[in-house]
Length: 125
Image (tube, rainbow, N blue to C red; front, side, top):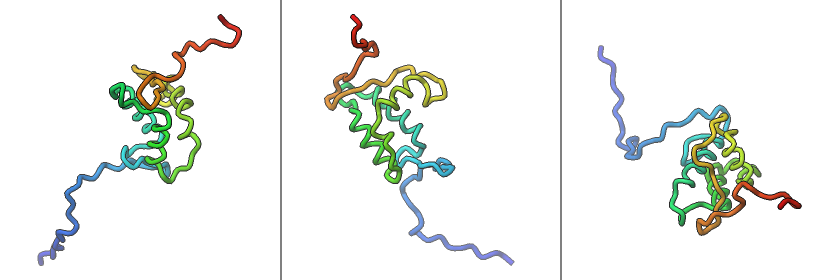
């Protein structure tokens, strides 16, 4: 006897392509990136440096993005972009692989904001 095949409903078909889901291992996964928090930080720093000058994201905008990407995760680290940027530039977020283009801090208009890495200590000339 032949097995009966279930008829597929047209309601179950979708036109959108589903993103492959990353394994969460209990860790939060970004809504649009589909990866964890650390990889999302790396992604946003890389993308920000690739943007034209007038489109660069300021730290406040990066914070907003991270909070919207992980709405269920309430963490102060999303507000400490400069700390995470320092870790990224040192290769800590990328397992000792220092990025080719280091992330820099920008203001809302895309103008470089912050020190050039050669900050003087008080009392030095």
